Image (cartoon, rainbow over all chains, first blue to last red; front, side, top):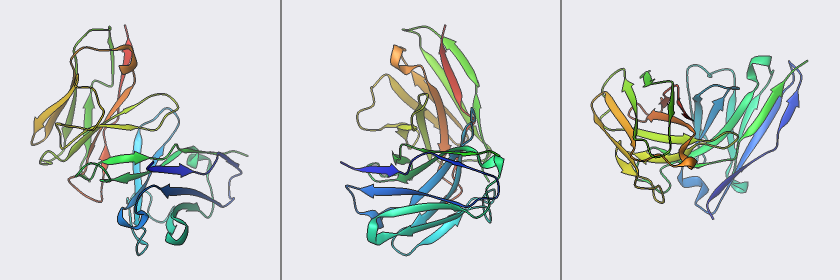
Length: 121
Length: 108
């Protein structure tokens, strides 16, 4: 079964660092970009950026460039989303997703289950 | 960035109704459009891509159409499981993917 399994919910304080993960299985991990998508409470979907797991090349949305870091370890088929200093405004659900695995288009056809990040003092 | 504007932002309908959701892009996107369904507490699910192609396993009551900047998602006969939030997304400007703001479909 093709799936992306994300790490569990996190509760952090402002200023703390955090790394969440997304492990792919059932497909060729290095053949498909992995994207991260933010959903703030009660709000819509925002694409944050993506990584090519084969060489760790990244693209970021201008809205998130410099605020987060996307990385990957292809030896364990895992992508990461990282913050060096969290803010309360980072409170959100974060999804990883793969585009074009089944469909011949750059649409997200595989999604992780989501990781809820809560930042509160 | 290409901006995606969905309408309406919310919609009340009954089981069996036909509903249409519209998505307008700020520039032409050559049918590079996907539609997703999201239920509370769940990840989005791909319904259609390339504006009108149905993802495998998606019921045929869902359909998509459009061209240029204007696209629609139609549900021909609403079923109880269809009450959810729907998002459009353009992938014409890769990697600058953008989503519409969502349409919440509620039971009347």
